[in-house]
Image 1 (cartoon, rainbow, N blue to C red):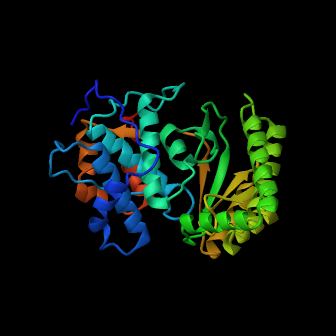
Image 2 (cartoon, rainbow, N blue to C red):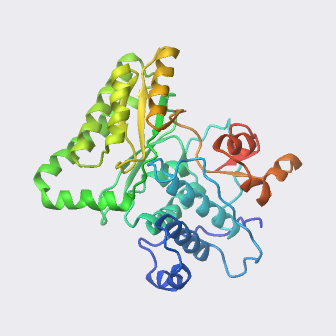
Image 3 (tube, rainbow, N blue to C red):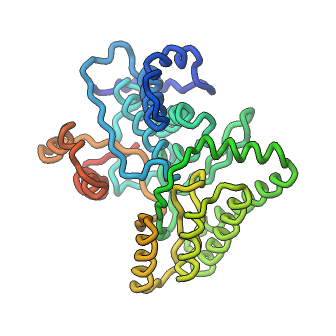
Length: 355
């Protein structure tokens, strides 16, 4: 269904609609598993909110994730962004995506802002009180300086579009945890020890601002990279003091420190999930292999990544080979993350378009 070009962008209210929540309750009552409940809740809430009653029946939606679920890498936000963009497109709220992977995007489009705001509502369905940073990055791409200023003030989001490439190592402990539970634990700690935790949170804000200023430099030299490494080390220590680390995350940090490959911190809500390591330049292949061997023996999964990249995209194609891969049966039967990426990933398929 092609979107109408003159359809206004219907932005979401500040909070979830209590009447709609009540109406969805009976449809969700049979789901016991929290991850499934959150996903179904977000799906139904966004579908009802964005797709008009005239939406034709018989539609089939199939979702696969190449991100580890419950690992602090924003899988729920990515899902919410996919839902908001798909339903916004079907409902005629956003126009066709036109930028290709080589296009330089210099500003936030109305479509990306629309997807960002509605995906935040999906995150609220899943987490209750999310920060909004994960859906912002997934929507707009690049990197984001994000500041949430409380319920009475709007969040501040500053995009970093021309970020120099930085090599990262993501390590999944495969230790699941619930973001909402960890957020609630930190909130209780702040309530119990307001003065002490205020100093920690202020220090974390200062570190984020210093890192932001370093990353804005047009050429990130060795000195700037060293500054970021130090800031990451300090930041992780502060997160540990808030009680959101986990023994498995500390094992990753210990091995990275012993081999001097970079600086490591927990990511996401902590409590398990993933650690992120900013890698030093010039790591010897044998050193990296030893690190991978150690992490694998601990039962962890690690993979290299580069900070940055495009935001939400839309794949439409007339290529029969691609269309065959996108049938429900074939899509579901893709066996692994690599199979999905190689079949329809934006690195391999040039037909992806971005807003």
